[in-house]
Length: 346
Image 1 (cartoon, rainbow, N blue to C red):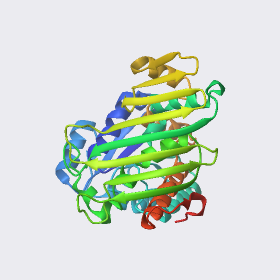
Image 2 (image 1 turned 180 degrees about the horizontal axis):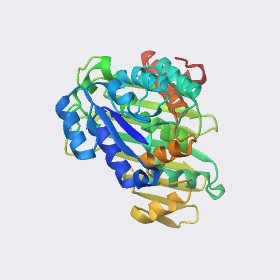
Image 3 (image 1 turned 180 degrees about the vertical axis):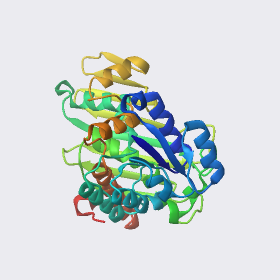
Image 4 (image 1 turned 30 degrees about the vertical axis):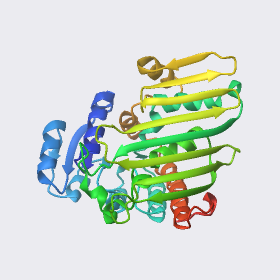
């Protein structure tokens, strides 16, 4: 199985290393094929570290692989994914899928028509902490889920170790912290709590980058009757890593996630007063029992390709998160008016 990469930046490096750690390379006979990046030096560094060979164009990569990772800036995703699908390639596309909901919908349609394995970089779907949170919410002993409070803060990624200046260009990224970063959070709220019926949101721009909001506060009403809030911010405090704090209240259980997005810890307290904590390797082992396969998104992508089956989360899943995000932006444009998600179309 020849695996190629379009884009050789931070996120491509993450997926390359993750694939190496998964053990699926040897298991599935993966061959590191071509990589292309508009920055030749970055492509060369990626190739030297990963074992890929540098290609002169994206077409050279696509013509010489069976599966491709699309890890370029967001505005390029629809065009590059379409080119890959035209060749019948299996596709892993980074999130967000596109700068607009309509483009994301079209990408999913094309992938479904092509009948190939497709996966999106909503990697928190395989996070032990968030898988265990969903397990705790679904447990009948918890009672009905009532509300969730989700806070996500990160220094604006045009600086620091991200150094992705393109995230300050609306033409390349589409929008700011909500679309580019917190589409993960929107997907997790839907994954853990349930489908979203309507939203209300307000946004602000402190950095003065045209079309790049750096603060969004949203409220969500879920179809199951639960409510939720999401606060996402891009600040300038480089001393803080990307941090999330999540609180979930069920009728008879309180759940709290802090620290690492993957290994927790996650705490929960039941109505009897018993307090519990899981983190690190014990959390990973407990969560792995909840899924088919492993918790490594890249290993599971190539295993699905090798087996000729679907993988998750797929592009259709990402479209649903895009639909909620677009409803939030629509609300913010109307000064926080409620927007019904089902009525949001590309």
